[in-house]
Length: 280
Image (cartoon, rainbow, N blue to C red; front, side, top):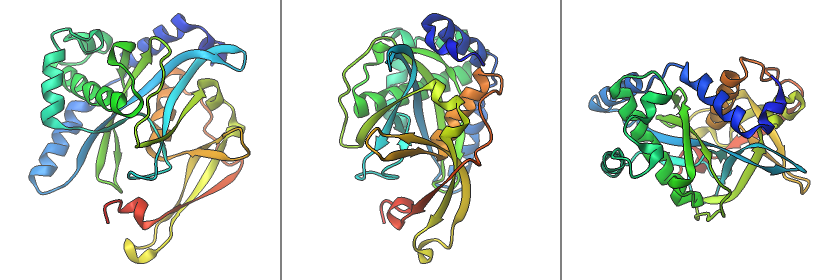
């Protein structure tokens, strides 16, 4: 992929809409599957996140960046890097989605999803619901005004089996720069250039294990991650659901040219009981 595209504000946005417009969206099937499992006693949850793209000046040049958050230690999975978002609040988000369908917010206007992607009316309604959910959470977490967003498309859902949760990701551009107003749930904001993801040396394999086996039985596995220097001699690690959602997005828009060899270096991640059982 020509990385210079990330420096072209309009052309890249059109590229993203074109690529996502051709992608199938599984929201109706996945939502029905979760509802059926909950009727059978499952506690599986639904959540939405917004993959935020912003065009801004980084290191003397302007290009697109991902606007991500590092979760504070006060909430579940503290220390992880994630997209703004959170759990669906069915009553609140359904009501807001219905109100906003009338066109109060251009991003959430009634026919928006069907214009961007070839989806049926039920899937379009679910996209609008999860977009409402994600933007509400982004407002609460980082102070993003929904009026300052443009919807580009929906990504396939992603299920976390360890936490019995399915994430419904939507992609938006922030129209203008804004001042972050972070909540207590956010330790800091990370702005990572998209081009950073196309250099193999930035990847590693993460060795994940539990610290105390008696809580859930032993867990140990390896998974790819992105190593992000913080400019102060330390580093942040992007892994798990957010890594996979972003990697899938980049795979779609680049026709598969994003790196897929992660064997250059190793990092360790210990899952504490507090991480696995945040309410325990």
